[in-house]
Image (cartoon, rainbow over all chains, first blue to last red; front, side):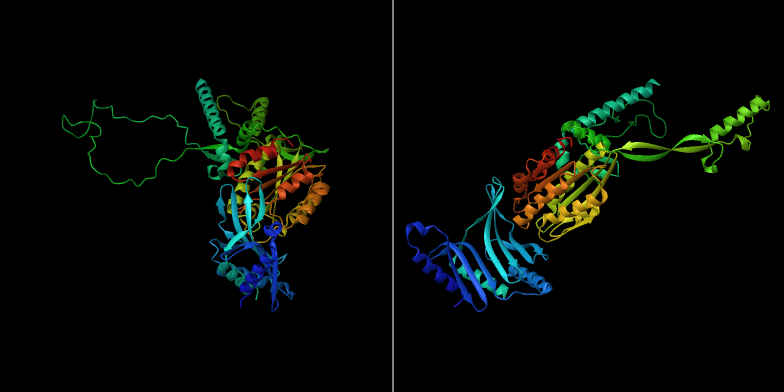
Length: 169
Length: 370
């Protein structure tokens, strides 16, 4: 069974565990370990059709020590993100590759604009061993970025988790 | 003489009209870079499509009159009537928009008047003394290249008249060695307030061409105004992503990096440049930084605020921070500075979401007369 499917099962279980009304709208958190990969998912809700997701984070156990190797991997991983994750209606583009801080930032381009706001996905790659997926909203009125949830179908969620894992491998 | 005066009056009137037109459209010129085609170091050319210069045009009135040359009696003079039908498209360029040349000084005057910018009061206990050589004296010795022909001739004439060698019927002046006069120079010293502008720009991956164009336009107008206010203006350029480096003007506006953003790297370099080259006692120092405000971390924001408060702000006349919008929005750096250093008199923060905001932003930066 794929990591995405296992996580979905865990999320359903977590949702049924927190049935009380007070906890219904709270964010829930599940994690899963597979080989040397650790998956973490924070979400708001899940049902038969889809998921209201806050973020997905995948990390690899062992750190890479060589700086050149880290930067080489960051470039490769950024390339893979742009090629593989093309099913979210907004494609990714490399925005910053910070060799000094060993970090790459990719955002969906162009950002979706609605009323006075911009919406976009962001994937941050850290040190070649961590990957983080999140959606943001920028409000022109408040001049501020805000983390927001993404609505994904179960199929897309599974595919995304598996792709993020394969990018790290 | 009166003709010259009339021409002068007409010229002054024309200049007035042009200045009025430019003032009317200044907001447009400021926010549209293509409108200002920089022309050399001291001149700018501004297209003014609205000004029509009166000119003579030949009409078709000359139906009659006397003609000469070939032709039978009764042949009409002048061009005949055009034939109807489809003609071919012309291959000549159309009429161009009229361009008016202005000195940067005139442009700065217009900017100052329209934006109601106060004149700057230079700070600094000591004024810089500038020296300049002026050819204002005459000497009996000197290189042949500096020989003053008129003076030499006059001396020769004087000598010949006094000695009775001058014949008014056959005037012939021959200078001898003793008559030769040469231009000589004096070194003049005069006080001059000197100023330096240090421009800093975030060139990280999130600063795209559109954002850099805003910075280019804004710095053009800041430069124009400060050059008008100070005789000797020096400009230095710093770019930064996660690291800062000093570059020349061209690189400043064209370079594109894709690194992260560590703003403090630029502030550190700016402080180093001031400390090594520009004593605040002697120089009027201006620093302007432009970024989309998406700094690497809140820790670096804090470090920037510390650097500004303890190192940079005490040394500069003015520190201007302009925050532009990236494709994704604008970071929190401007709010952070406002929250922590908003009460500092010589720190000016300006939010520039698009080109239209440049006009007000220039007013923000230069409106205090610092």
